[in-house]
Length: 287
Image (tube, rainbow, N blue to C red):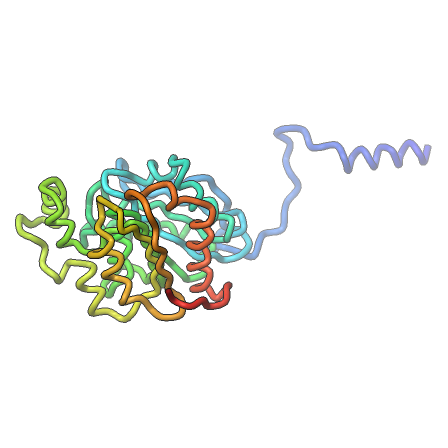
C-alpha cells in the first residue's frame, strides 16, 4: 500500500496539468511598471495612431529586472511594421532584446516626416505610453536609419519630449538642408512635414542644433560609397561632435543600407555601444 501511495505522489508531481486547468499561483516578480502593475512579456505591442503605429517589444527579462529602451526611427517611406518584418533588421532587433533592451519601433508620425518637430511631439506621446508597459530603468537611447537619423538626432537635443542618453545612426541623414537640396521629391516631402514652402531654417535643422548642444555619445556607421545619403555631409560631418570615450565610428563599404549593416558583428558593435552607456562594458577608445 505504501508503495502504491508513493507512486501516486510521484505521478502527481510529474504529469503536466490538463489544458485549461487553473495554474498554481506564482510569486510576483520584482520588476513592475510605473503604475505598479507587474510587467508582462509581450510580442509586438502596437502603440500610437492607427495607420502609423509604433511597435513595442519587451524582453522576458524585463519582467523581473528594469531595463533600458531603444527607440528606432525608420527609413523614408517605411514603417514600424516594415522594420519588424525585415529579416535583415531582425538581426539587430534580436541582439538588442537578448541583451536586455526593450525595443520601440517608432512610427515617427508617418512614413516621410523627416524628423519634424510635429512628428517628434507624437513620438514623445508614444514613448510615454511605452514606459507604462514595462519595468523601465530610466534610460532611453535612439537608433536612426537613413531618414530616421533626423528623428533620432532630434530626440537627443534640448526641447525633446524625453531624454536620450546616446544616439546610433546607420547610413543616416543628419543635415536637413542637404536632404532638402537632394531631390525635388525630398523637398516636397520636407515641405509638407515642416509646413513651409521654403528651405527649413537652421533653427529646425537637427545637425545645426547639435553643434550648439553638449557633445553626444554617438555610434555612426556610414559608407563613402553610399549614393543615397552622402556620408561626408552627414555622418562624418556630425561625428566630430561625438563625446569622447563612449562613441564609435564604423566605416562601411557598399550601397545604402546594404547587407553589411545588419550582420551579427554589426549587431554586437551596436549593442556594445549601448552597453557602454549603461556601464555594463569597459569604455573603449573613440576611432
